[in-house]
Image 1 (spheres, one colour):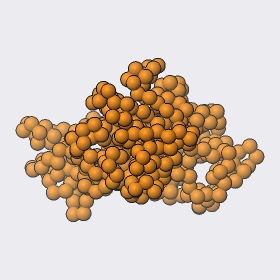
Image 2 (cartoon, one colour):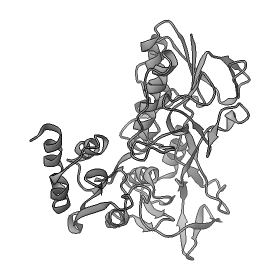
Image 3 (cartoon, one colour):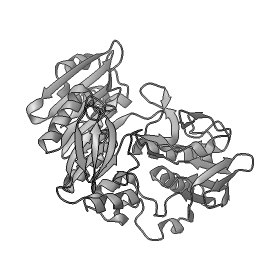
Image 4 (spheres, helix red, strand yellow):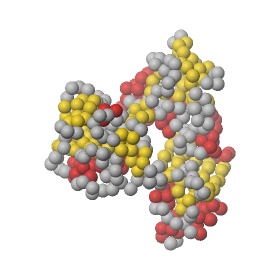
Length: 415
């Protein structure tokens, strides 16, 4: 059997390793579009603050690792896919054939439609090449503007501050990380960042970026002007699936529609990670969850079904994000926004940056937001994913959300 994995990120690497474990004799090729060995984008912020070198970002550190597994790694961007001939044409003019193919091409940054966004002082922070450019442009005290305070933006934020940048963050939402944190939680995170010396502008967009000598001026929608030596855009991402247009593979809002086996609408073509339009555990609806744990979960399931069709079902991914922003941990789980007709409860210690909010549907815990609290991360996920009926413990949690461990022990072990 000849397997092709398109994409050299965490999903692609885990899929290839799983394929090798399940099919020792199969031919396995990973196609990646960057010249570096397969690496983790999530490690780039640690590279920027010199916690690791470039090799530290590599997903597998040992020289010759993929060769030792008899996995070929080929550099090139997939330009088109033909299901009839079971082939992929690359940007290098190569044609790679396959019996089963996994599309794990991930996503790429979106640049906002702003005059001057193409200025040489503007960059994304997505690739190792981006990281090299940012590292070269940051000196202690240098003014830097970060566009976007979402999950990815906040990871970059910490690295920039640690590197000594004089940082201004511009976020169009009314709070930081608006797709992960509720109003109170996101606003408290903003307060924390400002106390650490970061200038945070929310409910604001970038109107234009203008040259200003060796720097640029970032003009905001409310009329402010911020001078910067470097502008980093972290304003969102979109799936890399355009090369599938015309192939017969069904696409949904730029992602690949898959079933419970991570199989696309075309036989022998599977998808995993940021590019897969897959099932959400909490809602049962399909969409994209662009987080690494989901990508790795997809990869293992897809690889199993590529070797043994319909052998492992995807039950849906729990929407869970954990973010460390300059030492303050924030997290969201499941339906953190709540459900129609559901109840919620919260505790707030604003002075010490501690917050927890629980969301219920009947007597089931369905979502949560936390800030400054790390001891209950696994328990909250367990209660949500287990869909446990809390019974009397629901009212106890409404009275005191900090009793989640006691509630977990009661419903799982009868304690």
